[in-house]
Image (cartoon, rainbow, N blue to C red; front, top):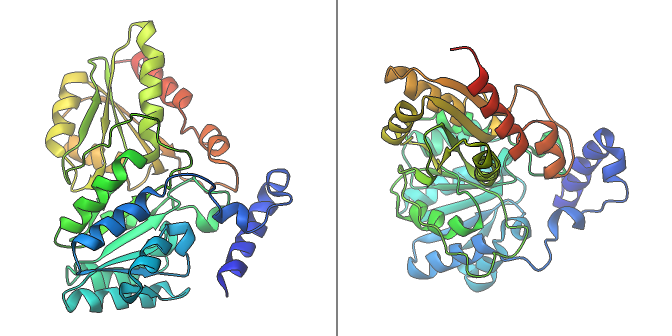
Length: 343
C-alpha cells in the first residue's frame, strides 16, 4: 500500500467515527503543517553535521517526520525503507552493528506496535545503538485508532535496555535529540510536532536523561506529567492557585529510567500524587510512578490521568483531550477529588 493510500484508509476510519469532523478532508490535511518551526528536523540535521556516524531511516513519511531536511542536505546518509517498518528496524540494527548511529522514523504505532518483535530481538536484546523516533503520540491525531499510540510506552517499558524519552514540547526537542544521540544504547524518542511557532523569547529547555524537571513548586499535591500533558498540568496548577492550593508540577521527560529519587521525595512531601500522560493509564508513566512509590513504601493519595483502558476515535486533539479527560480541567478535577477523598 502506498503512503497516500495508507493515509486515505486511515481517513476512512476517522470519517466512520467522526463524520462531521472528517468531511471533505484530504491527505494534505494530515501532512501539511503550514508555517511552523521544524524543530526536530533541524535538531537532527544539526546533530548529524556534528557526528558523521548518524544516519537517517524513514518509512515513507519524510514530510510528516521532518526528515526531508536530512534527506536534502545529507542524501548519502538517508535511507527510505518504504512502508516496511519491520525491515527498517532490521536495517537499523545492522547499521548500528557496523558503527553507525541510526535514527529511525515513522509514526509511534509503526515504530513500536507493528515491529515489536524486531525491536525486541534486533535492537533491545543486542543493545544496539538505535534511536526509534515516533510521531503522533497518544490522542494527537485525527487518524483514529489505527494511528493513535496509546500503548507504545508500555511496550517499550517492558523491553530490557530500552530508554524512553518524551520531551514536554518543541522547546525541549533539541535537547532530547542531543541526549538521545549521546546515549549509548537503544532510545525510544516519543515526539509531537510543533503546531505553532515558539513564543518570542521562550528559552529552549534542557534535558538530562533520567533526571526529572520540577517546573512548579507546591506542597498541596504533585503532578508528574509527561509530553503533551505537561502544559495542561501547569494550567491546572495555575487554576487552583487562587483557591489556595499550591500544586507542584514535575516534567518526567524520561519515563525509563524513571527518576525514582525525585518521584519518591516529592510524593513523601506532598502526600497527594497525580500522574498525567497522553497514553493509556496501564503500563505507562502512571504505572511506573505507582510501582516506584509502592516499592519505596510511600503512602499517598494517588490517581492517574490518561486514556482509561479504552480505544478512542478520530478527532481534533482538544476535542479528544476533553472527551477522554486529559485536559487542564480534568487534571484540576482529579486533584480536587483527591483532596476531598476520605483519609
